[in-house]
Image (cartoon, rainbow, N blue to C red; front, top):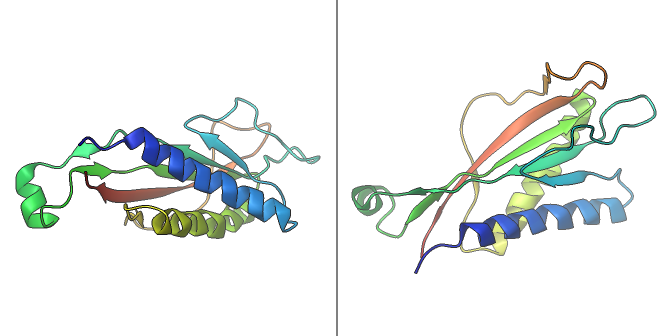
Length: 151
């Protein structure tokens, strides 16, 4: 049976949207959630700072060769899936404020899925100023994820 990558992507996106909605219900500032693209002009506040948002970037996955499966993943894994979250906002501290939302989303996804998303190693993930944005400053940080999906 083939693994439905689109369904896993949709479930992760639904978890992100639910967490953002829950956060807004609790009185926190709203967070926009985007699926694999960002508007040319994301919403800004009165000081022209980009309002916080998270982007889920899809991944088609990579078939794990049989030899790797049997050695590395005990024969249970068929696809190495590596979606990515980009956390972005008009101030570096706002980006940092998105981290708990992203990690809570990963935890919620993991409890509702047979897959187990993990943050990928890769060194520091500092908020970085987007060099393409001068009129509306934007900072971002990438949260690479990885899981192994079984059929």
